[in-house]
Image (cartoon, rainbow, N blue to C red; front, side, top):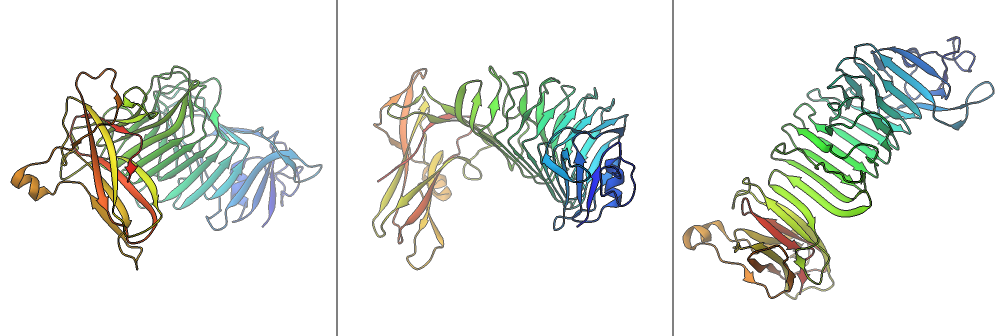
Amino acid sequence: MAQYHLLNTGSATSPEDTWAKAYTTLANAAAGMATSDVLFVSSSHSESGSGSTITLPGTPAAPNQIIGGNQGATSGLTAAASGATITVTGTSNFALAGSAYVENLRFVLSQTSSISNIFGGGSGNVQHFKGCDFSLQGSGASTILQFSSQTTSTSGKVTLENCRLRFGASGQNISVSRVLEIIGGSVESGGTTPTAVFSMTGGNRPNSLKVEGFDFSNWGTGFNLIGAALDGPQNAVFRNIKLPTGWSGTLITAGIPKPGFRAEMHNYIVGSTNYRFWIEDYFGVIREEQTIKVTANSYTYKVTTTANVNYPASSMLVAEAYFNVASAGSAKTVTWDLCTDNVTLTDKDAWIEVEYLGTSSSNLGSFATGKAAALTVINSGATNLTTSGTTWTTTGLTTPVKQSVSATFTPQAAGHFIARLRLAKPSTTVYCDQAPVVS
């Protein structure tokens, strides 16, 4: 594992092992490195050039390390520090391929036309950026930051840890390809608020996005989080993020979900107001509701289904509840309270599925449900759910209908079990209590 240096005032003299002999550009350094090699980058380094592809030799098993920091007296770093800047100009794409850990580099992408800036786009690339800036400052209306590859049969993963983002035009966005993980970080001050931040369009292949602890509050109030999604399973999870005061955007742009798409947002804050969840998929929308609820509880799941749910072929997963059963052999009933406005639900509209241990000698899961059997519905129709006597606050509803749905099972071993609430009545709003009752 060799150690090299990068500083624009260096002499680029082999073996580039001191600041005086340092490489002067990232491209030249990448060409001279081998797998596992380390590149020290001075915090005073600054380079500028037109778009190009830089390919690091690192592999997932032997990644390169590129670390920015304060220069030692003759070589090495005394501490990690920001400041090193890679500026890209012109009208050509910029790409950084290969597997690597990159810390404290600032990428200023100032191309004047709509282009793609691709990080981790090589086959099987794994890249981890810590404390880096990805600053789109060009005017290209549809310039993108693409993480990983959109090429068929190519996998990859990119992680952004405590990084900053900036866009230069409202149509610019981040293209999520394969796996993108964002941990911490924030929006850089200045720049332009995008119409939508993320595009789940990785070549019509499965893509996964996870954003945790990111601060979006330096942008304006109208942006959507996800603006596009193509075919293939697309999954996005936002957790513990901050949005601007008065944010009026949406989790996803209307009309984009396809079968297999699901986006979730948990424990997010808008200005100074905290919210628990917002979930959308092909079958509907689930939002936190604090007014229409079981009076004794804090909130409900407000579920608005689309026309795409239809018993018995499809249903929407509303919530999963995990609970413990300490002993075996006794029948248990899981009950979930529901409320609608002048809609009477049946056992083909809503049901609970319980996953439990039904055999004492095996951890193979067993399942119990209150869902109506398709043949029963065909022959004799569905059965109305039980009327509930639970006290609800129903402010705003014209004709509240309170019901409950249940499933009974007999565990043959103690353990932690799962209750799943599902809805299959299309184009309907249902308020579902925050948790089931197990008796």
